Length: 482
Image (cartoon, rainbow, N blue to C red; front, side, top):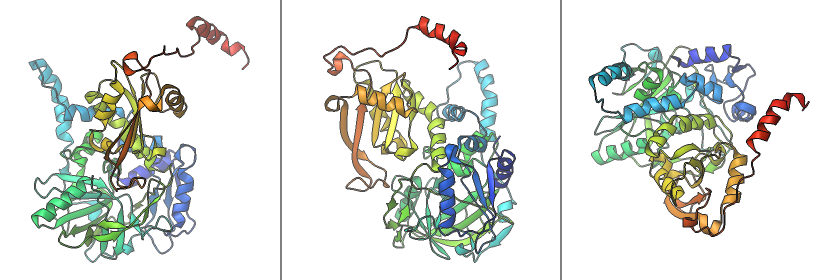
């Protein structure tokens, strides 16, 4: 089961031998990044790290918390993350029961959905300490890389509400500290937080914002999940946990945020103000993204638990902790992709490709041009629209095995016939395109080719030993002394 608070998660990690406490005095300016970077690149992602002796601060920093398959599963409370995807599928695509018996069978499922609705509480651990004159720099906010434009909050759940519908959005966006009372919000053009900002601007309204650190163990992840705009991320977290996320109303804002969080920063954005310079920032691409214009947030209060833990992550040259957040998204949303595209066997968004540079997908090929049909459909699905290269393989290729991927890609593709170059939306962090957020895309058909697809020769057979010989050697294997 998922954990009710970050500190409960920390205790469990320590029991499992998944946490290391660092007592050596280190600065949050660059020094802890070097430690985190080295640990996250260890085999299996290394351990979670609790920096307990920070130069100039009493609040400890927790990092690499979700940075392994094991810890990601612990945080969400599932051994098989695809089980979460099927739960989400049943909610987004409910089936109409045909008989009274089927209706009765659905009652437990409907009760679970009702139990997942966020619950508002009157008293919250996160509001044990309230500072209406909060100085952002009183928190141990790190500067990650030498050329960063300043200190950055990197693992905050940025909470806003649609100014028209009131639907909540929770996003994972980087946040630059501009001054003790001002922040810059990196709301990219494709993200829902940006849509809320522009709606507020068109209505002439201020947009209230809360930035939450910690809470129930799935919450830092759900802010990164590519959910449809009408799905509340905290409802999704409740579905994952099979219990509601507890929320509390803000002190200076009319927004609700996680009652069990460690720290929350309250404030607002005034869309009538000029955008401000944000960046540079050492990003998950492994390159610095340059300075650009983004909205400014005014801080109205900082609330936190007594003795809070500051949750932090870094991004940079892969692999980093975000590898495992991306893996969780890949597994959770596979069932929804399969619902829309039943021919899809599996897909993989490798962290080394920064998630949006490569999508490897295996399919049950049924007709000529099937690979292109699947690739076009994927490019029409939410944030999959930002994928730069989609490579389609036969069903028996393990798309998670880079050796199989390169073997099939290299052998099955004639670039003159099997590569399609097109254009579309691109992740704004991609520096290779001439225009930010728009550029070229490549679809590669690495499946077995059919005559109807222009292949004029006879496609060769894959080398494979006979079943009888394999079974004989299997039976003798332990006697061979190998």
